[in-house]
Each structure stands twice: as C-alpha cells, then as structure tokens.
Length: 251
Image (tube, rainbow, N blue to C red):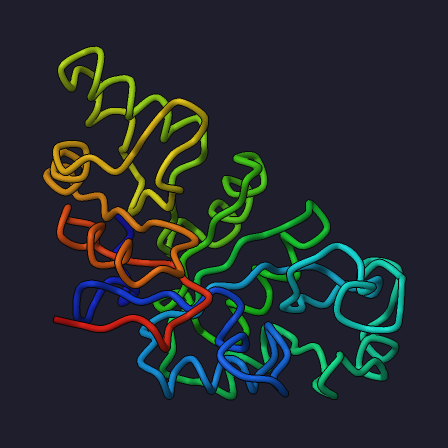
C-alpha cells in the first residue's frame, strides 16, 4: 500500500460523489460550491472525474461533453481553459480546475478518476504542483491510464483496483478459497465497487473481511439510500460513495 494520508481518519469514510448538490436547488455538481457543501455535511473525501482541456489543464467534470449541465454542447477536450472559464453551469457556477480544488480545500482528500489518456499528464502535473500526493487516490476504469499515472507519480499515491483485479479477487475468494488473493491485491489500497455487477455480488462480509486482512479497504458506490448505507457499513465496508452525504448518519 502507498504510504499516504488518504486513509488517515475515521471509518466509515464518506466520499461525496461530485460534491453535494442534489439536496437542494441552486448548486452545480462538481463545483467548488458543491465540494464546500459536502464538507459542511461531513464528507471526509471528495470523489470526482478528471478531464483535460484542449490546452492540457486538468478540470473536475463528470461528462465528456457539457450539454447535460450547460447550454454548450462542446466536449471538454475541444475547449481551452479560458473558454471553459467563460462557461457557466446551470446554476451559474464555473468548472473548477484540479489545482483550484487543491488550493480551495487544502485539507480535503480527493478521489480522482482519470477519464482519458489526455488527462493523465495534466492530472499528474496538478498533483505534483500542489504537493498533494499524500491526499489523493488515483483511479480509472482504464487500467493502462491508472498505471501510467501511478508511474509518473512515482507510486507515491493511493490507488484502487481495476475492474479486472476486482473480479480476480472475487473469484479467488469465492472459487479458490482465497488462493492468489494476496498476489492479486499487491500494490492496491482499495476496492471501489458497486454492490453487484451482473450476477456477481460484492456485498459479502467475508469478502470484505478478506480484503481487510490483506490491507485493502472496500468502498461501495454510488449509495444514496440511508438504509443501504447502514447495511453495507454493518457488513464491514470502510467507505460509502454517495450523492447524498447529507443523508449519511454515523452511528
């Protein structure tokens, strides 16, 4: 596991998915305002996707294109940062850069999903520029993107397992009595997973316990039902990724 501060603090960890914006009108997802709201309501971590502008700046935004949350239909990758900063989202917020988030919230921990090959270097540059390696976790649905970012960062940041590694770990646990599990999760800090994927269910106390014994935290996404949050925590989950931080209640 990476020696960082990302996992220092109380468990369960509360990851604000795109910040907190759906609890009331007037706040845009993935805005600095949404991140501030999440922190106010008890988020310990912020989860966001990272895209790159045309001129190579890392920005925090969910979709490839702007049309869902603004009047613009362009892709993030087609616009320069100055053009991005001219755009206002539905509730008049602007799209923040990754560096702006680091500066605005110097103590918050960021869970970053790198969404494209072009976003790798801008993400790495922002993390290094702000000396933020100890407070980020780098992930990606593309294992090659994740591995490239980790290499550029000197493996100094926390990271979560790829989909392939999660399935391999599940198969080891359920079919092979845990054989090769430790090898599969070597250099992995967390499983960040849905409750189920097709016929495969991950919400097993024994699976979570095995991960924990091997130094891997288990975080479930995206959980917005307080009853389900409570159930997963009781099963041993270390964290919940949610749109509704305001509905999470610590026992």
